[in-house]
Amino acid sequence: MEPIRPGSKKMPDFDELEDRLIANATPKPTLVIKTNLDPKDSTVDNPYYRNTELTDTERFRDYFEERKE
Image (cartoon, rainbow, N blue to C red; front, top):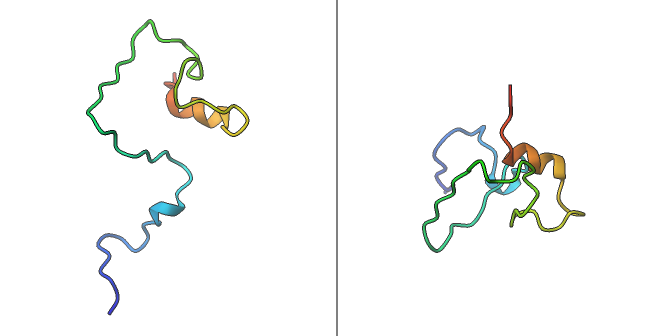
């Protein structure tokens, strides 16, 4: 008997996704607020940007910074 998989069969396996960040849940609730005191560059003082050699800076900035269209 095959396992039941609800939803669309076209839905990709979440273990194979590369276009998003899927983080583990935090042990406590958190509140994140962006203010005018935050640096304009999202790589400055960002705890998620640790290793500059392994992180794609362009994709990182695209994810964290607002687009002005």
